[in-house]
Length: 425
Ligand code: SDX
Image 1 (cartoon, rainbow, N blue to C red):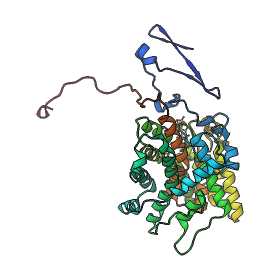
Image 2: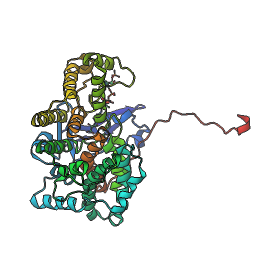
Image 3: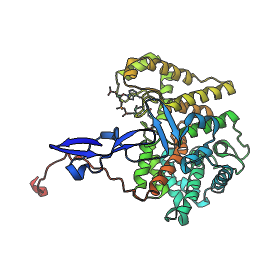
Image 4: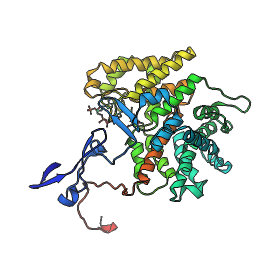
C-alpha cells in the first residue's frame, strides 16, 4: 500500500506490480477520497493503462514484443510474422502464418473508385497528410465490416489495414511524381511488393536485392510497436471512445507526423544534409546545439524512456553498414552521423541529460540508401507501426472494463465575470 497525507488525512492506495516487476500506485480513488487530482505535465510519470503487448526497460536498453527480444526478432523473424505476433500475442504456426499471409494478399488491392481520391490532392501534398486521410477513407470501401461490432471481422480489418497501408503509401508517392500507380503483385512478399509498387515501371519491373529487402524488413520489425508512445497513446485514446480501427489509426498517423516523434527520421537526414552542405564541422554544430540556438536540436538523439541506449539504433546502424557493404557503396552522411554520435557520447552536455541515439538516428539513412524519398520517411515509420496500433486498438476494444480516456485539468483562466454589452466595452 502507498500512503499519502492530504489536508491532514491519511489516504492509502494499492500498489500495482507488472510482470516485469514495474511498480505503480493505483490512484483511481484519489479524487473521490480527497478532492485532489494529480498533475503530470506530458505524462512523464503517469501510466495510462495496463498492456501486454510491449515491454521497455529504458535504463537497460531492453525492448520486447510479447516477450520476444527485438534483437532475436530482427535477426530471425520477418515483418509479417512480427506483425502477427504483436497483434495476436504469439508467433504463428505454419497454418496461422499462411492464413494471415493469404488474407494480406486477398486484401492488397485498392477499390478502383478509391484511387480517384488521389486526384484531389496537389502533387506537392505531404504523403503523411494523404496517408491519414486515405486510411480513414479505406473504411468507407468496406462498410459491411468496418463499422459493425462483430469481432470476427477484426482479422479482415487488421489484414486489410496492414496490407493496404503499403499500397496506399506507394500510390501517394507515384501520384506525387506523376507516374502511374503500380498494382500489387500477389507473388511478392510484403516488403518486396512495396518496393515493386514504389519503383517498378509498366515496362520494367523493379527487383530489390536481398540485402535491401532484409534491411526494410528489419526497419519495419523495429518500428512495429513501442508501448505508450505519443502516436500509440493517440490511437488508444481515440479507440477508447469506441471509434473504429481506421479512424483510430488515421489519428495515430497525425500524431506520428510531428518532428519530435515519427517526423524525426526525416529531420535527421535534413540535419545531416545541412551539415554536409554548409561545411560546418561536427564539433561546431554540436556547440550550436549546446547553446540551444533556436529550433536546433540533435535530431535522432534523446528519448523519454531510453536513458542508456535505444537498442533499435544499434541494429539499424549495423543493417545500414551491411547494406552499404553489399552494394559496395559508402555514404558521407553516415560518416557525419557516426562522427556526431562519437562527439555527443563523450560530451558532458549529452551525458548528463542522458541523450543517446534513438530509432530515428540511423533509420532515415537506410531509407535514403534504398531510394525512398525524404518526405516518405515518416510514412515508412507509419507502415511499420501499423501492427502496433492495431494491437493496441484490439487490446482496448476487447477490454470489457475499458472506459473512455478523459483526463482532468487544473483551470488557470479567469474567475467568474459578467457579460458586458458590445457598445459598453
Ligand atoms: C520517437 O516515445 C517513443 O517511444 C517514441 C519512439 C517510438 O518508437 O514510438 O521511440 C519514436 O519518437 C523517437 C524520438 C524521435 N525524436 C527526436 O529524435 C527529436 C529529438 N529529441 C527530442 O526532442 C527529445 O529528446 C524527445 C522528444 C525525444 C524526448 O523529449 P523529453 O523526454 O520531453 O526531454 P526534454 O525535451 O525534456 O529534454 C530534457 C533535456 C532538455 O535540456 P534542459 O532543458 O534540461 O537543459 O534534454 C535536452 C532538452 O533541451 N534535449 C536535447 C535533445 N533532446 C533533449 N538537446 C539537444 N538535442 C536533443 N535531441
